[in-house]
Length: 186
Image (cartoon, rainbow, N blue to C red):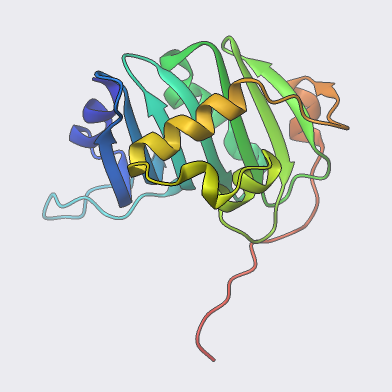
């Protein structure tokens, strides 16, 4: 299965879970997704990744069926598409929360529909739930992977409001100077 291949290739970090849904052969994942791996040090040990998708939520069988996550820069979209675009299922839906994106928009790429939403701080899972009007009760009694499947089912029929269609080039030009807001110990 696709997500197990990603795991074996070291593309998952900060893993929350990777497990099979109640539909045999379909797996759910939550954690961070490596976009650009780090170099090896002089002893051959892998260094931390250079670029990641934060808070990634994936649903896959032999293809990616859903993708939700956070990017720091609109310029990271082509990196994501190059690395994972060939794994997109036809008609896949994605919701990407991007720190320096100016306006919400929808981009079609590799047969997938990508909804791009500006977000300076927040957790992609929580933001996706809010955007899709899902509540905790919608997930009651479900395994973590089945919660991902429930989110994917809602995303499949999602029609964003005030979300114009755009080209990837238009998305890449729609940026601000915003930086990720990080909160921590004082």
